[in-house]
Amino acid sequence: MDQTIIDLYDEYTHAPLPRRVFLERLTALLGSAAAVPAVLAAIEPNYARAAVVEPGDPRISVENVTFQGATGDVRGYLARPKTAERAPAVIVIHENRGLNPHIEDVARRFAADGFVALAVDLLSPLGGTPADADRARDMIAQLDAGKTVNNLVSAQSFLMSYRYSSGKVGAVGFCWGGGMVNQFAIKAPDLKAAVAYYGPTPDPAQVGSIKAPMLLHYGGLDQRINAGIPAYEEALKKAGVPHQIYVYEGANHAFNNDTSADRYNEQVARLAWGRTVEFLRQYLV
Image (tube, rainbow, N blue to C red; front, side, top):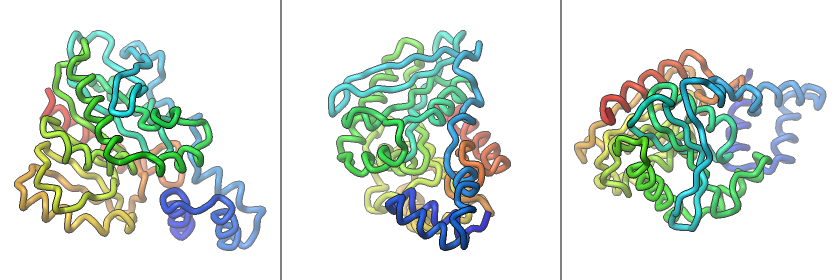
Protein backbone atom coordinates (compact mmCIF):
# COMPACT_ATOMS: atom_id res chain seq x y z
CA MET A 1 0.00 0.00 0.00
CA ASP A 2 1.18 3.51 -0.77
CA GLN A 3 2.98 5.02 2.22
CA THR A 4 0.99 8.24 1.84
CA ILE A 5 -2.18 6.32 2.63
CA ILE A 6 -0.60 4.68 5.68
CA ASP A 7 0.62 8.08 6.90
CA LEU A 8 -2.89 9.50 6.44
CA TYR A 9 -4.34 6.62 8.46
CA ASP A 10 -1.76 7.25 11.18
CA GLU A 11 -2.81 10.90 11.29
CA TYR A 12 -6.46 9.85 11.50
CA THR A 13 -5.69 7.47 14.35
CA HIS A 14 -3.48 9.75 16.40
CA ALA A 15 -4.04 13.42 15.56
CA PRO A 16 -6.95 12.61 15.47
CA LEU A 17 -8.85 13.48 12.30
CA PRO A 18 -12.64 13.18 12.23
CA ARG A 19 -13.59 10.10 10.23
CA ARG A 20 -15.44 12.24 7.69
CA VAL A 21 -12.29 14.24 6.97
CA PHE A 22 -10.17 11.08 6.82
CA LEU A 23 -12.51 9.49 4.27
CA GLU A 24 -12.64 12.66 2.17
CA ARG A 25 -8.84 12.84 2.05
CA LEU A 26 -8.54 9.12 1.40
CA THR A 27 -10.99 9.38 -1.51
CA ALA A 28 -8.98 12.25 -2.96
CA LEU A 29 -5.76 10.22 -2.71
CA LEU A 30 -7.37 7.22 -4.40
CA GLY A 31 -9.16 9.26 -7.02
CA SER A 32 -12.38 7.32 -6.51
CA ALA A 33 -14.77 6.47 -3.68
CA ALA A 34 -15.13 3.01 -5.20
CA ALA A 35 -11.60 2.09 -4.08
CA VAL A 36 -12.11 3.15 -0.45
CA PRO A 37 -13.73 -0.05 0.94
CA ALA A 38 -10.85 -2.25 -0.24
CA VAL A 39 -8.27 0.06 1.30
CA LEU A 40 -10.15 0.24 4.60
CA ALA A 41 -10.37 -3.56 4.70
CA ALA A 42 -6.59 -3.76 4.39
CA ILE A 43 -5.60 -1.02 6.81
CA GLU A 44 -8.23 -0.96 9.58
CA PRO A 45 -8.11 -3.52 12.41
CA ASN A 46 -10.02 -6.74 11.87
CA TYR A 47 -10.39 -8.34 15.29
CA ALA A 48 -11.45 -11.62 13.73
CA ARG A 49 -7.70 -12.12 13.22
CA ALA A 50 -7.01 -11.60 16.93
CA ALA A 51 -6.54 -15.18 18.03
CA VAL A 52 -2.89 -16.19 17.77
CA VAL A 53 -3.45 -17.90 21.13
CA GLU A 54 -7.07 -18.96 21.60
CA PRO A 55 -8.79 -18.23 24.93
CA GLY A 56 -9.29 -21.95 25.39
CA ASP A 57 -5.64 -22.84 24.76
CA PRO A 58 -4.81 -25.69 27.20
CA ARG A 59 -1.52 -24.05 28.22
CA ILE A 60 -3.16 -21.03 29.80
CA SER A 61 -5.93 -19.85 32.08
CA VAL A 62 -7.79 -16.56 31.53
CA GLU A 63 -10.12 -14.49 33.68
CA ASN A 64 -11.59 -11.00 33.99
CA VAL A 65 -10.40 -9.21 37.11
CA THR A 66 -11.11 -5.96 38.95
CA PHE A 67 -8.77 -4.11 41.29
CA GLN A 68 -8.91 -0.85 43.20
CA GLY A 69 -7.18 1.96 41.36
CA ALA A 70 -6.73 5.69 41.77
CA THR A 71 -10.05 6.27 40.00
CA GLY A 72 -12.03 3.46 41.64
CA ASP A 73 -12.59 0.00 40.20
CA VAL A 74 -10.30 -0.81 37.27
CA ARG A 75 -11.01 -3.79 35.07
CA GLY A 76 -8.53 -6.04 33.36
CA TYR A 77 -8.06 -9.23 31.41
CA LEU A 78 -5.63 -11.64 33.04
CA ALA A 79 -3.93 -14.61 31.39
CA ARG A 80 -1.46 -16.94 33.07
CA PRO A 81 0.35 -20.24 32.51
CA LYS A 82 -2.02 -22.93 33.71
CA THR A 83 0.56 -25.21 35.34
CA ALA A 84 2.92 -22.65 36.89
CA GLU A 85 2.67 -22.21 40.64
CA ARG A 86 4.38 -18.81 40.37
CA ALA A 87 5.41 -16.83 37.30
CA PRO A 88 6.84 -13.37 36.57
CA ALA A 89 4.17 -10.79 35.77
CA VAL A 90 3.68 -8.29 32.95
CA ILE A 91 1.25 -5.39 32.68
CA VAL A 92 0.05 -5.07 29.07
CA ILE A 93 -0.95 -1.53 28.11
CA HIS A 94 -3.24 -1.10 25.14
CA GLU A 95 -3.15 1.25 22.17
CA ASN A 96 -5.45 4.26 21.95
CA ARG A 97 -8.35 2.01 20.97
CA GLY A 98 -8.63 0.49 24.44
CA LEU A 99 -8.68 -3.08 25.69
CA ASN A 100 -9.83 -4.85 22.54
CA PRO A 101 -9.58 -8.48 21.33
CA HIS A 102 -6.10 -7.90 19.90
CA ILE A 103 -4.68 -6.74 23.25
CA GLU A 104 -6.40 -9.64 25.03
CA ASP A 105 -4.65 -11.93 22.54
CA VAL A 106 -1.31 -10.25 23.30
CA ALA A 107 -1.88 -11.05 26.99
CA ARG A 108 -2.53 -14.68 26.09
CA ARG A 109 0.68 -14.77 24.05
CA PHE A 110 2.63 -13.64 27.09
CA ALA A 111 0.92 -16.31 29.19
CA ALA A 112 1.88 -18.94 26.62
CA ASP A 113 5.47 -17.71 26.97
CA GLY A 114 5.41 -18.18 30.73
CA PHE A 115 4.20 -14.87 32.19
CA VAL A 116 1.22 -13.77 34.22
CA ALA A 117 -0.13 -11.03 31.94
CA LEU A 118 -2.62 -8.39 33.01
CA ALA A 119 -4.08 -6.30 30.19
CA VAL A 120 -5.52 -3.28 31.99
CA ASP A 121 -8.58 -1.45 30.66
CA LEU A 122 -7.42 2.09 31.26
CA LEU A 123 -10.79 3.36 30.02
CA SER A 124 -12.41 1.88 33.13
CA PRO A 125 -12.95 5.34 34.70
CA LEU A 126 -15.10 6.25 31.69
CA GLY A 127 -17.13 3.05 31.71
CA GLY A 128 -14.66 0.75 29.96
CA THR A 129 -13.62 0.18 26.37
CA PRO A 130 -16.54 0.51 23.94
CA ALA A 131 -17.02 -1.61 20.83
CA ASP A 132 -16.68 1.49 18.63
CA ALA A 133 -12.93 2.00 18.10
CA ASP A 134 -13.30 5.67 17.16
CA ARG A 135 -15.24 6.33 20.35
CA ALA A 136 -12.50 4.58 22.33
CA ARG A 137 -9.93 6.85 20.71
CA ASP A 138 -11.92 9.93 21.66
CA MET A 139 -12.32 8.64 25.23
CA ILE A 140 -8.57 8.12 25.57
CA ALA A 141 -8.14 11.88 25.08
CA GLN A 142 -10.45 12.51 28.04
CA LEU A 143 -8.32 10.55 30.52
CA ASP A 144 -6.39 12.32 33.25
CA ALA A 145 -2.76 11.39 32.55
CA GLY A 146 -1.64 11.44 36.17
CA LYS A 147 -4.53 9.31 37.40
CA THR A 148 -4.00 6.90 34.52
CA VAL A 149 -0.38 6.35 35.53
CA ASN A 150 -1.53 5.86 39.12
CA ASN A 151 -3.95 3.19 37.91
CA LEU A 152 -0.94 1.39 36.42
CA VAL A 153 0.84 1.66 39.78
CA SER A 154 -2.24 0.01 41.32
CA ALA A 155 -2.08 -2.71 38.67
CA GLN A 156 1.52 -3.34 39.67
CA SER A 157 0.50 -3.67 43.32
CA PHE A 158 -2.28 -6.06 42.32
CA LEU A 159 0.17 -8.27 40.44
CA MET A 160 2.81 -8.18 43.16
CA SER A 161 0.33 -9.79 45.54
CA TYR A 162 -1.48 -12.00 43.02
CA ARG A 163 -1.30 -15.62 44.13
CA TYR A 164 0.20 -16.92 40.87
CA SER A 165 2.73 -14.11 40.51
CA SER A 166 6.38 -14.29 41.56
CA GLY A 167 6.10 -10.66 42.66
CA LYS A 168 8.41 -9.35 39.94
CA VAL A 169 6.48 -7.08 37.58
CA GLY A 170 7.33 -5.54 34.21
CA ALA A 171 5.28 -3.60 31.68
CA VAL A 172 4.81 -3.68 27.91
CA GLY A 173 2.84 -1.08 25.96
CA PHE A 174 1.94 -0.41 22.36
CA CYS A 175 1.48 2.96 20.62
CA TRP A 176 -0.36 5.16 23.18
CA GLY A 177 0.38 2.36 25.64
CA GLY A 178 4.07 2.59 24.76
CA GLY A 179 3.99 6.22 25.81
CA MET A 180 2.25 5.19 29.01
CA VAL A 181 5.01 2.64 29.68
CA ASN A 182 7.52 5.49 29.53
CA GLN A 183 5.44 7.55 31.98
CA PHE A 184 4.87 4.53 34.22
CA ALA A 185 8.60 3.83 34.39
CA ILE A 186 9.17 7.42 35.55
CA LYS A 187 6.57 7.01 38.29
CA ALA A 188 7.35 3.46 39.52
CA PRO A 189 10.87 2.99 40.91
CA ASP A 190 10.24 -0.69 41.70
CA LEU A 191 9.17 -1.63 38.17
CA LYS A 192 11.60 -4.36 37.11
CA ALA A 193 11.54 -3.97 33.32
CA ALA A 194 9.71 -1.89 30.72
CA VAL A 195 9.13 -2.37 27.00
CA ALA A 196 7.66 0.36 24.79
CA TYR A 197 6.57 -0.35 21.24
CA TYR A 198 6.59 2.84 19.13
CA GLY A 199 5.45 4.94 22.09
CA PRO A 200 5.61 8.73 22.39
CA THR A 201 8.83 9.65 24.15
CA PRO A 202 8.79 11.35 27.59
CA ASP A 203 10.15 14.69 28.68
CA PRO A 204 13.93 14.13 28.79
CA ALA A 205 14.07 16.10 32.05
CA GLN A 206 12.05 13.35 33.77
CA VAL A 207 14.07 10.41 32.48
CA GLY A 208 16.43 10.52 35.44
CA SER A 209 13.62 9.09 37.59
CA ILE A 210 13.54 5.86 35.58
CA LYS A 211 15.02 2.86 37.41
CA ALA A 212 13.75 0.01 35.23
CA PRO A 213 15.78 -1.31 32.30
CA MET A 214 14.10 -0.13 29.09
CA LEU A 215 13.58 -1.91 25.76
CA LEU A 216 12.33 0.43 23.03
CA HIS A 217 11.02 -0.70 19.63
CA TYR A 218 10.38 1.71 16.75
CA GLY A 219 9.30 1.44 13.12
CA GLY A 220 11.74 3.04 10.73
CA LEU A 221 8.96 4.72 8.75
CA ASP A 222 7.30 6.19 11.85
CA GLN A 223 8.65 9.74 11.54
CA ARG A 224 6.08 11.22 13.92
CA ILE A 225 7.31 9.14 16.89
CA ASN A 226 10.92 8.73 15.86
CA ALA A 227 11.63 12.46 16.06
CA GLY A 228 11.84 12.08 19.83
CA ILE A 229 14.31 9.18 19.90
CA PRO A 230 17.64 11.11 19.95
CA ALA A 231 16.74 13.23 22.99
CA TYR A 232 15.28 10.23 24.80
CA GLU A 233 18.34 8.11 24.13
CA GLU A 234 20.67 10.88 25.29
CA ALA A 235 18.69 11.28 28.51
CA LEU A 236 18.74 7.53 29.18
CA LYS A 237 22.51 7.46 28.71
CA LYS A 238 22.99 10.49 30.94
CA ALA A 239 20.85 8.91 33.68
CA GLY A 240 22.67 5.58 33.43
CA VAL A 241 19.46 3.68 32.67
CA PRO A 242 20.11 0.28 31.06
CA HIS A 243 18.39 0.39 27.70
CA GLN A 244 18.15 -1.16 24.27
CA ILE A 245 16.75 0.71 21.27
CA TYR A 246 15.78 -0.92 17.99
CA VAL A 247 14.60 0.97 14.92
CA TYR A 248 13.32 -1.49 12.32
CA GLU A 249 13.99 -0.34 8.78
CA GLY A 250 10.95 -0.40 6.51
CA ALA A 251 8.47 -0.97 9.37
CA ASN A 252 5.50 1.28 10.05
CA HIS A 253 3.98 2.45 13.28
CA ALA A 254 1.92 -0.38 14.81
CA PHE A 255 4.00 -3.02 13.04
CA ASN A 256 3.12 -5.52 15.78
CA ASN A 257 -0.65 -5.24 15.34
CA ASP A 258 -1.52 -8.23 13.16
CA THR A 259 -5.18 -7.23 12.92
CA SER A 260 -4.20 -4.39 10.56
CA ALA A 261 -2.88 -6.16 7.49
CA ASP A 262 -1.09 -3.33 5.72
CA ARG A 263 0.75 -1.94 8.75
CA TYR A 264 1.63 -5.32 10.26
CA ASN A 265 5.14 -6.54 9.49
CA GLU A 266 5.39 -10.22 10.39
CA GLN A 267 9.17 -10.49 10.18
CA VAL A 268 9.78 -7.43 12.33
CA ALA A 269 6.98 -8.31 14.76
CA ARG A 270 8.46 -11.77 15.35
CA LEU A 271 11.94 -10.34 15.85
CA ALA A 272 10.71 -7.67 18.28
CA TRP A 273 8.57 -10.20 20.18
CA GLY A 274 11.52 -12.53 20.61
CA ARG A 275 13.64 -9.68 21.91
CA THR A 276 10.84 -8.63 24.25
CA VAL A 277 10.41 -12.08 25.76
CA GLU A 278 14.17 -12.51 26.16
CA PHE A 279 14.44 -9.07 27.82
CA LEU A 280 11.59 -9.77 30.24
CA ARG A 281 13.03 -13.16 31.17
CA GLN A 282 16.40 -11.53 31.79
CA TYR A 283 15.01 -9.04 34.31
CA LEU A 284 11.95 -10.80 35.74
CA VAL A 285 12.85 -14.48 36.03
